[in-house]
Amino acid sequence: MAANNIDFTSDELNAPAWMDEQFFMDVLSQHLNDPSLKLIECKISPATAKGDHYSSIMFRVKVRYTVQQKTFDKSLIIKTMPETDGHKKEFMGDSQMFPTEIAIYTEILPKFEEILSAAGEKITFCARCINHSLEPHQLIVFEDLVPQKYDVIRKRPATIEEIKSAMGKLAKWQAVSFKLLKDNSGLFDKLQYDLSTMPNFLDHKILTTGFPTFLEVLDNVESLRKYRKYFEPIKDVIIKRWVEIIREYRENRQEDAYYVLCHGDFHLKNMMFKGTDCMLIDFQLSYIGSIANDLHYAVYLIFSPENRRHNLDELIYHYFTTFQNTLEIIGYQGTLPSLVEFRKQLFDRKYTDIFLISTLLPIFNHMRRGHDPAEVMEKADTRRELFYDKEYLEDLEYLLPRMLHLGYFENLE
Image 1 (tube, rainbow, N blue to C red):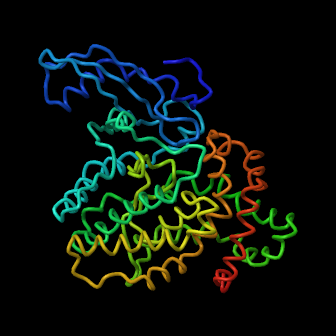
Image 2: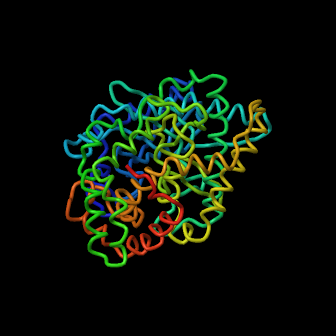
Image 3: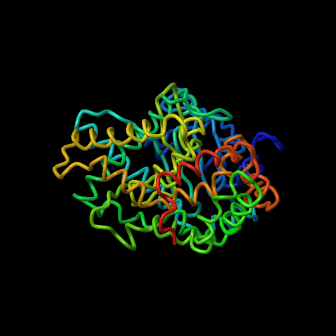
């Protein structure tokens, strides 16, 4: 592997020592169930570009091997834990990210695809997992989607067609989960974790300094100053309110709420496209929660400012009608969720909206442009500068009046 490359994060420039020829021999032999396999060559390189993700580390491995005197080439993606001491390793800590993602890949999504296939809906949600382990190393091995002509969108906004593809795939996934939660909720027993349960995350400066910096921006930008009075009363509780929404299914389940399997990190870098066909990736933070949660995430981390201004209701409607239609296709027997109630549940969880625009939106804007996440995770000055970014301020000029007109600021506490 190359010793240095500014296009990749530093901890993906050199593979760990255990990722050797014997490791790949074992992976392929188990996958193909053929002990006669012989490895001819393997080439390891970083799997993702700088800015695509932060927590785990990923490598692309091109292997050439023989089976029964025939030669084959295959490209694999290896996802594993950071081993170099530093902020990223500390951030991952004792998290349950790998057990969660392994369960999604090996138990839950295959079940979803099977249910949809039986109903005549052929669908593939994600890359195929061919190997996984928790000991001695936490890792997942996937088939590489890039040779299949899928790629991550970088340095440009997604088109309406691409967004509809992603939202439609999420809607089908969540419709199946909605039905299964009624029929067989035990399938999801392993999914007891989310972003808020990451070790040390709620105390991280990226959260604790975000809202105070947002209030500072409202003070310093004359056209936004009038909105500060609405946010001031929740400055000490905004993170708590967001956590309550994320953990609602586990800790404060509501009788009439629509609960689904949430992706948990539903942003543009966690999907790959071939034309308008979308594959979802990165399920380390998936959990059972309100149907509103991934939708709020999508509005700020998938939709562009232009989409939010002109296509917001259309895209949310597309998601919900796909959700309803999928429930009918798979034979859901209960009363179908209604659009009016769905929109109400989105509004009732407005603290997530407020949390995202006040704390994470500037940071995700920065990462969307291809910058290294470590810059904002580890550098206070960089984070503060992002709150004065021109695009973010222009977004607030639209978003804050909209919140006022929709009644977001009534009874905030």
